[in-house]
Image 1 (tube, rainbow, N blue to C red):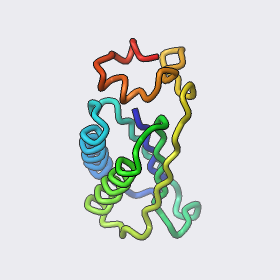
Image 2 (tube, rainbow, N blue to C red; image 1 turned 90 degrees about the horizontal axis):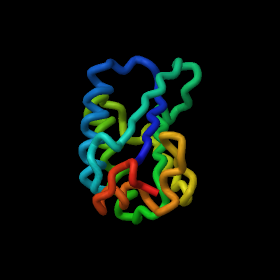
Image 3 (tube, helix red, strand yellow; image 1 turned 90 degrees about the vertical axis):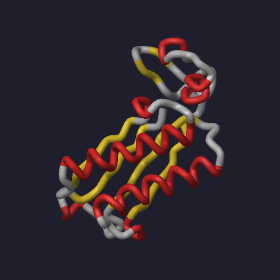
Image 4 (cartoon, rainbow, N blue to C red; image 1 turned 45 degrees about the horizontal axis):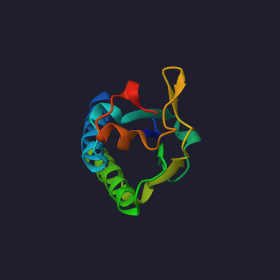
Amino acid sequence: MPCIYVNWKEGKTSEQKTEIRTRIAKEISETIGVGPEYVSIFFNDMPEENVPYYANLIWVYWTVGRSDEDKDTVVRIITEAIHAVTGDPVDIISIMIFDLPKGNLAGSGRVLNRGGSIADQLTEGKTLDECE
């Protein structure tokens, strides 16, 4: 269940955001083996005077346990989607990946990932309500 926060200069259209969200959710869900509905993507539009040179700063939060290959793939997916849809050069797209330790993700009023990665548990056939 990755949560992806896209922080960038205001001015992107709703259509661009929808296209980026669709591309990223589809490809990441295929990479980690969960449905696209479990890939949350949030956009934070900031005034230009608050944006440094690296105008697109993306934070990816997910539970610990992803391979370096998964991380490389996710970086490629996000970078290509933003570049293709907005035309922003790849050198201003910076991505930070945060691995959340077990027991540090909660939803529906309870901790969800004491039993490991939510994505792994969903892949094993558990429903979100059954995840530990």
